[in-house]
Amino acid sequence: MMLLWPLLLRVPPDTERIDPPFLFLALLPVVIAVVLAELSEGGLDTRVLAVLGVLSAVIAVLRGISAGTGGIELVFFLLVLAGRVFGPGFGFVLGVTSLFASALMTAGVGPWLPFQMLVSAWVGMGAGLLPRRVTGRAEIVMLVVYGVLAAYLYGLLMNLSGWPFLLGIVVPGHEQTALSFDPGAPLWENLRRFGAFTLITSTGSFDTGRAITNAVAIAVLGPAVLTTLRRAARRATVRGHVDPARTAA
Image (tube, rainbow, N blue to C red; front, top):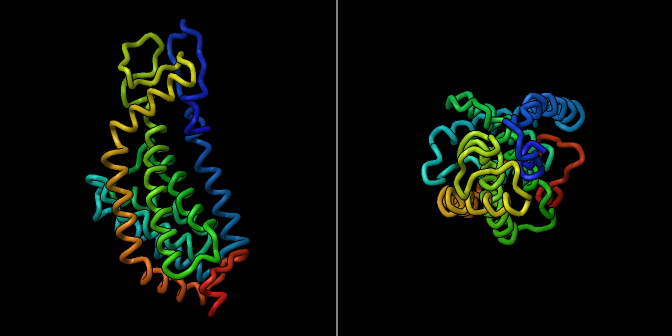
């Protein structure tokens, strides 16, 4: 609902101003805190929590040295690989903690941070939900494809979170461009506007750069990183998750 409210909102034309549901931003940290508490109490042992802390710090540093210029971000490939090894719950938590830590390090705290944390959590969780029986080269290919799709999906959802505010204030009757959010327009019209907006502003540039970075990093570094993470995973336990490499060992 935090992401989709611009597409679901309907207002009469004489409304003076539309205020976005900022209550969602206030509630999200509470929801994430509950998830973290549940996972740390029932799904992650102390060694996995240590791995979580190390990976969160590494991703925060990677985000600091790769500022995202042209979409070059070294954040998501490690998030995808860790979610693959440790499972969807770990991937979800890692997406939250790593983006929060990196925001503190890079002075990136702002109203966009809850959206970044949530969508990154979905990226890590999705990697953990990929088919477990795929191994070897096929696994790397699968992760490369997922990394590309996740890059575009991340950009799409983040664009949706900020689109109503980037092209002017959300006021019915306010002067708008052909790409602006219109709170009085039907769903299909706002979908058309948003599609044009995201294609022009990020799909062909930042999102494509992010997708290429993910694909290259996973293809080149993936085998070595997966081996290292699985070696660490053999000494730790994530309840309810079985990695195929650990089973074979």
